Amino acid sequence: MTQAKRAWLLCALWMAVIFLFSAMPGDLSEMESGFFFSLLMRLLSFLLGDYAARLDPALLHLLVRKGAHMAEYFVLFLLYRRALRLSGAKRPGLMALLLCAAYAATDEFHQSFVDDRGPSPVDVAIDTAGACIAWVAAGCARAGRARTHLRNRE
Image 1 (tube, one colour):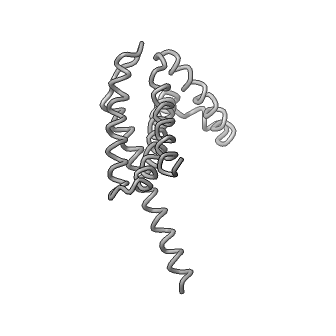
Image 2 (image 1 turned 180 degrees about the horizontal axis):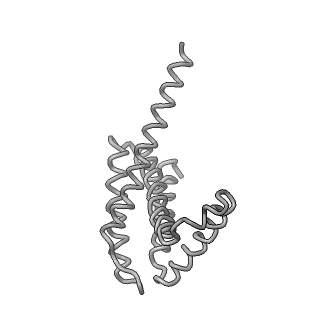
Image 3 (image 1 turned 90 degrees about the horizontal axis):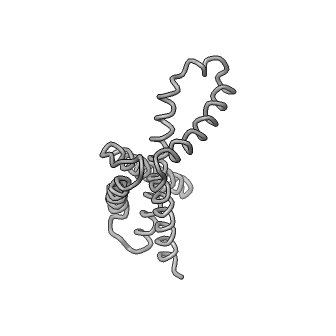
């Protein structure tokens, strides 16, 4: 199997992970995020002591849920970009961003068929923002490698 085919297989596997998370009924999804939220609260209590009790739990829970959306699409962008680059795409970053936005939209449509879930244009924007952050991070990493390479040549 070629590198490009393996890269596309990883994209498909990650898309399946996102699909499975989206297929969870609302109550199960809430329970999942509640588990991560409780871990975060323990960590914050350890790090911040009494100050952690003053933090708004509802806001933190929202940040955990939306942060997960961004992280899913951050990873998906990187996987798409690599697969596109290995496949010879001219603008792999832009194409990866467009694919992420399209998948986010279809994922939200899918959620309209799941119990206690529904489509949200805001979530599409959050997912796409995660992909945008990955694009910027990848560009910064590439620029940093280029600077290091230039310094090493001198």
